[in-house]
Length: 162
Image (cartoon, rainbow, N blue to C red; front, side):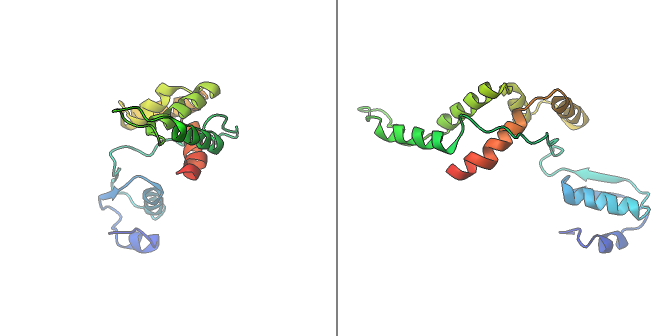
């Protein structure tokens, strides 16, 4: 089925002992599991994440203001790039490059005391399933702010300058 909604219809189409496989592991999948369980479902339920990974643990939101990865900083950097002289025979640097944005992000991380490694481990995981979930929960408990800082950068400044 394409959509599990309305859940009451989905539950009625499922026998109490059926094996159920749910493609995806997001909120809709959780809705289906809860609806099945509350209706008395007793068969096995398997969630299969589309990307092969469970959704990440969402750490608490950061209330701190960004200091380096700001709209003003990106605009200033873009202005500097446009004034750089062209190098004869070499590539020009008239436009912002991804590396420029990453440099700003790392400056923000350094100022905030966030771990680059923590973000890179989240982006390129080496552990999966329950082991990864435990690592993410430990990171939140330890106060690591790399992931919420990256979310803040993406949700505020990056969206505005894109």
